[in-house]
Amino acid sequence: MYLENINSPEDIKKLNIKELKVLADETRAALINKISNAGGHSGPNLGMVEMTVALHYVFDSPKDKFVFDVSHQCYPHKILTGRKEAFLDSEHFGDVTGYTNPLESKHDIFTVGHTSTSVSLALGLAKGRDLQQSKGNIIAIIGDGSLSGGEALEGVDYAGEYDKNLIIILNDNDQSIAENHGGMYKTLKELRETGGSASNNIFKSFGLDYRYLDNGHDVQSLVEMFKSVKDIDHPIVLHIHTIKGKGLPYAEQDRESWHAGGPFNVEDGSPKVKVQEVDDPVFDSIKELLDTNPKAVVINASTPMGLGMVKGVREEYVKRGQFIDVGIAEENMVAMSSGVAKNGGTVVFGTFAPFFQRTYDQISHDLCLNDSPATMLVLQPGVYGMNSNTHIGLCDIQMFAHIPNLIYLAPANKEEYFQMFKFATTQKEHPVGIRVPANMAETGVEDTTDYSKYNKNKVEKKGSQVVLFAVGVLIPLAMKAAQKVKEETGLDITVVNPRFLTGLDEELLNELKKEHQLVITIEDGEVMGGYGQNIASFYGNSDMRVLNYGISKAFHTDFDPDELLKENGVSVENISNVIKEFVKQCN
Image 1: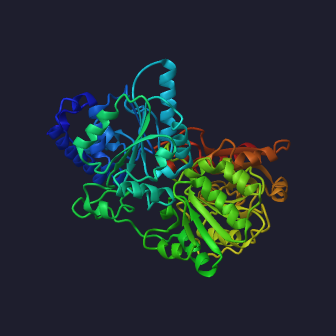
Image 2: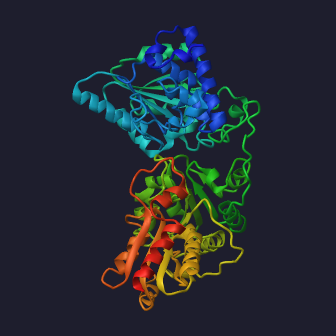
Image 3: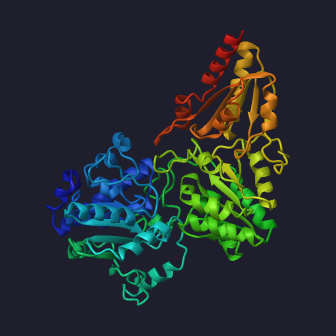
């Protein structure tokens, strides 16, 4: 066994080619041990094993710097750079993150979890190297799926003008999360089919040197290729064909499902923990719209599973021209949606909250400035969404609530979501966004609200002295806090569900002054610049006291949502205690 003696890339260099092949097998086995027991990104990492072994054999990390795009494919790199115990020993599975992280190792240059960034980051590293007049190879490792992102193409474009050492490795497994979309993938297919000799070469058109390797799992060929470009004096693209999910037959065959997932049985790929099937209100609402409105279309940016449009379901809607995946190109998704809406179509676009960060300009300028009546679904926002600091969605309210013309809605339950979706996709006045949490409850009571009456809040419980505003899915917590206060003090407080986040119900806020002295706001995102501070600003020159609770400003990571809320004062116990203390002081 060679892996047990590999504690740094220097140890890899002591091996011969035959031994490197064995090391690759052992690295894949360690990888499978981790992902089969703890879950993680399976397909991207399985396809990068041999390439990573060869990279560390030829290049000299960290003097030579590797920049992994998204870093979904960095597990083999971690195994070979002193972190193998996190893949071999279950007691250490939690020692490393799923992404590159400079806090873990000097071999990780950036904390990266978003797509299409590697070429730009690598160009910056190269320029920094040049300014210091130092040496070293700069290597960007980008997947074909990530290449469709605008930033990747901007980086490749500038790389064609750059004139010093830069190595761009295109890991081409003919797959994004789902299948690839876009004209460039016809070009990549031609290059694969012709062994890199097709005249239609997108990289050469950018002015870049180019080489192709068809078998990205042949360690010897990889080593030879990397040796031939080490210390090269100009930018070059190494186009390497790999197999996503390599080493697990079921992962190779069903590449979309095996992009990432939970623990599984290695023998057949069956899940170790049975996933409970739950209703998907997003898919249900989209399906009803598309099945009843032939002028409706849904546009997505490479995350179709978030909308329930999994493989085997979306194909029919693609044939009907009612579902479009633009690839990893969220900006294009938003601007296209504005165009569809402006020209009379009914359009819904959506992706996960962290990825909407890339779309701010398009939402503000292309969509809202033009007042195009498109529907935006912001999936898994707030503390109950993704919990990695690379995939954090705690600032969606700050991003969207201040943009003119946008109506941004926060459903507290499934019934409210369905009514908001119906309103959004039938009105023709403004763009409407809906923040769609992952844990909406079902009340069993139909929502008949007329959401065309903008900024009208719902009083869930009417009381006096104290009013508690709770955004979206925190309404149940607010109601429990109110019940606890009632039981322990006899006081009925008021609970308000704002539902509209892009404006204030000023009539209600003024009415509340008559019988209330304290307003408390709770939200599941960052408190700074959030919904609650708008309430505080409204009451600023009055006698009303306002307390705002939400998540602190930080790149929180690997957190338990309820614990993080509790740490920031958002819990039944804390809210009820604050109210009881206030009541005590008043009496």
